Length: 169
Image (tube, rainbow, N blue to C red; front, top):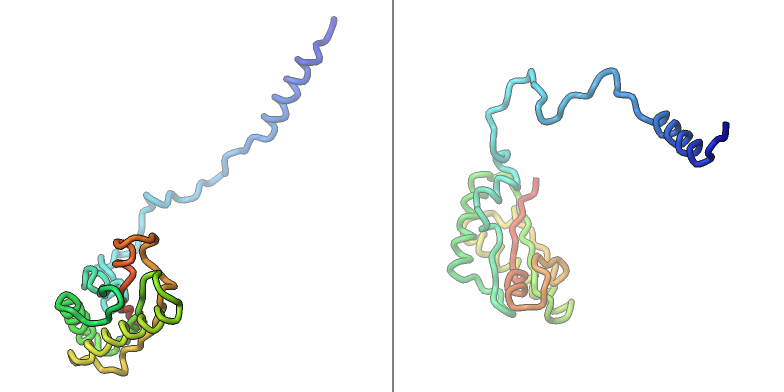
């Protein structure tokens, strides 16, 4: 009887692979999607009242105001957004906020930091004029360092010329 070396190699490989197969565990972990909870569900289905998520959800995009090129003036659309922010802040008098000033990529770093600061201060001053205590609002300028739109076109630049209000927990 003659043995075929290729046949022996295939049989050895098959045995090696079958010896490495995993055995199923004795107890399977619970299914994350279909787990049955014995806890009573909470009534809250939205964001926690007074949180940053609540601020963003309530204002529906009015946490950000936009500016024209090299400008920091508050126009009528900005006034409406800031009025909505002031109403939310009046509802939660213990909350503090930071107004972040931003600029587009054009211009020097120093110029854009100064412009971002003027934008943040303009938004803060308007909020204060609406009755929000100035001590509750801080400002910071990021200049061109934190763009929301990457691109070197007017559409991207327009989205990056902004002031964003962020609540502090």
